[in-house]
Length: 237
Image 1 (tube, rainbow, N blue to C red):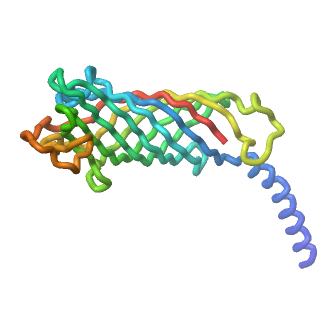
Image 2 (cartoon, helix red, strand yellow):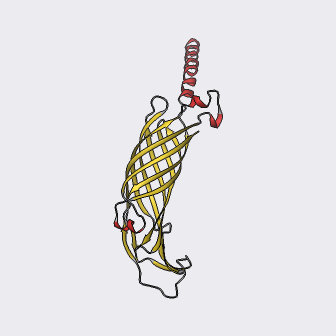
Image 3 (tube, rainbow, N blue to C red):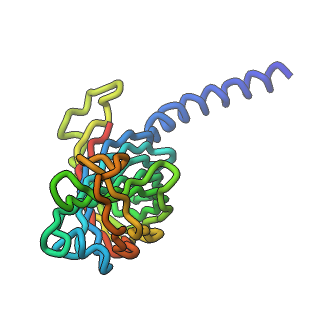
């Protein structure tokens, strides 16, 4: 019995001696900070009131963590603003805020190239303001309960600088530090925004009643669904 226990102990020690460095080599956890820009092709008549072209440009800030090898969970927010002249006379602005939760999976090869696919759930808020005359304004602003649900499906590819460029004897939080860029293309699907019955306000404040309110503007529905392209700078830790 003692011999069997000794043999079992030796086998376990040998297994631990082999598996420990193996597990250390499989440390896949990465933290990624993202700064990017995105352009969505919005072929909708209501968007013509706010832009001179069909592309709606936005900036994007996000953070993500690798929960399994190649599988990332991302939390971010997209923000953008478009400006135009309503009816060629009144200055208009359309502001977008879109928090999102995304999952992406990529496959790394050559140590610095990672093609991937991603899917995201979004919740977008729009606010609009139209300068009519003097201090009289018209517009609308979404609150947290007024947002519209949506989603994004994309395919992309990121290129990373090999980590050995930054040294091989690093440890701690910066041991996996590297930089990369990514390009992706996909399709965004969102619920349309209602731009009818815009409010009137005074001195840029929609909560103030103007002395001489006009009829409510009806700019229809704005559907932001369409093809999008993104370019991103990524910092890995």
